[in-house]
Image (tube, rainbow, N blue to C red; front, top):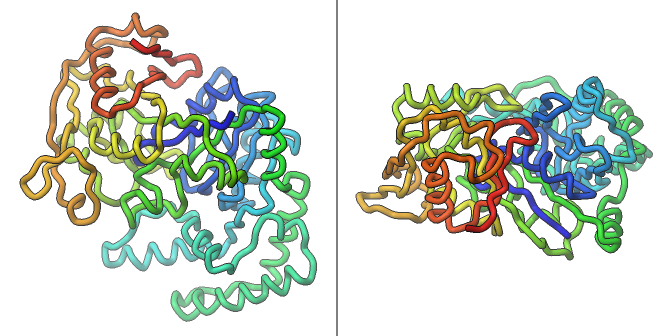
Length: 431
């Protein structure tokens, strides 16, 4: 059984809390793309956890977590993240964490280059809103075949050092001649590689073979995505995207099972819209600054990886339908419905106005840049729903809001979260 848990929108939809909840029924949780440029915030009976690289299933005893070959991994960040979770009582060992030997290493100079370029672009107001974690530069070097993989770190022979020397010589052309920055020191870089190769030696393995054997044995495997469909490198709001394939169809490939197909795709979307970083975000135009401030505070909308205030707006039907289609979602989870408790009237972006014409299709390029929201309001419920645990306990207005979204997006909503705690979730059966 292969299931993907994916984001429908711009990321920050609450995928981590859904993986944490649903992983109780799975044997393995595998990340298949991205790096530490985004985060999942999970709250359960053990505490509050912020994860950047590790799959959210690491919080579930008995679940094995896999970091797939489609990821880019900063070993220094991973070391700190593991230490932080261990300090909170989470057990992490080679028994429950497997790291692909094919995963790309995010080197220290990728992080430096990311910051240098974002600073250069910021001078002219052209910045992308990068997290400055080096992810784009690691992926770029991957496709130019000018970086290392995790398997290289655990085999620090002279051949690898010669390869590293070639990379450092090439990268210093950029660091010195483009940015006027301090050159990379080969011996320091080699020592860094040796340090993290030794630290993660017992964790690095052929995760593709591990997953294939598990699938043959009938194990249930969940694939966990980072970010959402609108940040996908091919189908997102390019160039304001991530540098990897976020969509569920890529999950088996990035995890290490290229010849396998998904059995189920579960799309995660918020009951409203939020976005970190630059790029077109039509939903925010549907609210005043004061309305957005109230929504941001109600939802505690600050990035898990960056701490940056998120841009917010009403639920966007146009973007969500497009994202659900990209993800091939068989069913949906609607998160943070309780955040809207304070509203008397709940706005929804029902269509876009593009060049004076209403459309329900998600545009790209200039058309998206210039799109204006067409807003509809629905009655609010104006009461605390965080204690609801069954569909029948939700007020009628909240039920009608969920039904409206379900019909507008065109996919069944199976799960509704009404709070951050693990059990604050309603299972909605077909009506």
